[in-house]
Structure formats: structure tokens, C-alpha cells
Image (cartoon, rainbow, N blue to C red; front, side):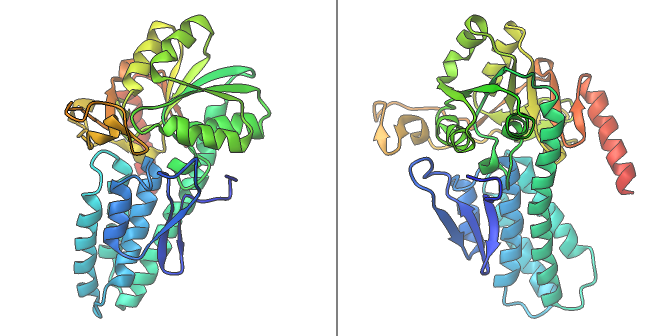
Length: 355
């Protein structure tokens, strides 16, 4: 997959998403012409990764505007509010979903539009802006984060944070791309397979293979062994929601990796755009954790791997407490502890710039 390929895009009046359930065996673009279809694509993980979900939701609002038969601005706003609720129910943990929906609705409700069609055009332009901004933000994240990567580094990466998890380029994997492809650094990536849906083994390994970046797939439970016996320079992970104190919700298994990294003295970095930081959530215990279908644990690619009668728990995310995190890499630079102080300072600076 080249850097120009977009995971989420608008074409011919439809929301187009690379179907991540089919990779690495097939490459297929799924196309949606209803809000319910986009919401289902988010729920069933046709599209996944916080930034990609946010962009998909934004295009979903633009699609709702296009599909609405309302002739008045007020009628269109009513339809948009209904569409927002449909999209908001798709997945509860990723804050970018709600950030994008709120941004689209602020635009819709914040001006006196001369016509419903003018609002429709503005919403599509805003969704496109969100998508374009994501790539630019990821590039800046990559530049900041690549400074943390020494030449010859061995890096452990969890889940998938590349082009497939964003609109393009990637967050944590974008740092690896920047270091390897743009700066010429020698890196080797240890790719956590990332149970239960194997986003590491299926998606991250596929992206690294396409980019020609050396890597080795490892079982999630092997990370401690590699840190202790083989040497690891740093861990890079993404985030679905970061609380005001730096506690981070990310793909299940991130917490385990952070604890083992601390035990072995390996720096552990969370990588995410500023939009993933939720200053309204004081700490990680307040973050809602999505519980998904047990079959994701008990079945792989349609093949049962456990007794049918055995129950299974399937939390999609866990929360890594802030004291395990070395730094949070955003488009504004690397934020370091104390996170409560430094995240609040960054938020105040951004508010000041926008004001």
C-alpha cells in the first residue's frame, strides 16, 4: 500500500473504506450510500483505528446530508441530529468518533445557512478537510517521533497504527515509516500479533511488508522474552482515548506490554493526534471499555479454536496508567510527565491559538 492510498475517502456520492477484515488475503474497497451502512462498517471493523473511525464518521454525516430529502435547513438539521445518534452508537471508546461528529455538528448548527444545499456542500468540504488534516497531522507526528528512534533500533509495536488505522501514513507506525523511509534509519519491528483479531499479524505486518521495512511477527506473550533476552530500544503504541492525566485506552494487551516494558527499562511511548486527548475525562477508570462478541476470541477466520460451550470475555481495550508511559507523541511534540500538568498546559496553549 503506497502512502497515497487512503483508507477512508469519498467517491461518487459514497463513503469508501478499505475493508480491513479481508487484509492480508484480499484488498477490497467497500462502498456505502447510507448512514446505517457506515455505522455498521465502524461497528464490524471494516474500518478501525481512532483517526480512521473519526474520518469515516465525518463522511457519514456528509452522506446523511446528501441522502436527506429535507428542503429546509431546519429539516436537514433534524436529519443530521438523527444521523449523529446512529453513528455515535457504533463504538463507544474511540474519542475521535465523537470529536469528528461534534465538529461536523458545530459547523451545521453554528451558522445561518442560506439553503439546505449550501449546508450540504459545507459538510462535505468539512469532512474532506478532516481527512486531509489527518494525513498532515500524522506527518508531523512522524517527524517528532522519529527523533526518539535511534539508528539500528529494535521496536515493539502493538496492534495497527499505520495507514489502515488513519486516513493515511499512520501514527505510531507513521513514526517508524518516517524513521526508516524518510530518514534512512535501520529499524527492525517486532510486531505483536494482537489477539484476538490479529491486527498486528494481519495489518501491521502487511503494511511493513509493502513498505519493505524489516519486521518479525511475535505472539503478544513473547514481548517480555524479547525485551529481556534480545534487546528492545522502545515500544510504540497508538491510543483510542487519552484521559486528562495521561491514562491511555488502547487495544487490549497494551497495558500488559507497558508493565513488561517498565520491568525491563524499555521506553514506552503512546502516539496519537491531539484530538485523541479527552480533557473531559479525568482519569482512565472513567473511560468506557467496549465489550465485543465472544466469538472474536473463540473463532479465527471462521475456524473455531475453543470449545463452543466455553464462555469468553472480549474487552476491546484496556487502560494503561500514566506512570507506565514515558511520553505521548502528538503533532505538537512529545509530552512528558507530569501529564496532568503538561496536557493541561498544551490544551490552554491550543485554546489560546484558536481564540
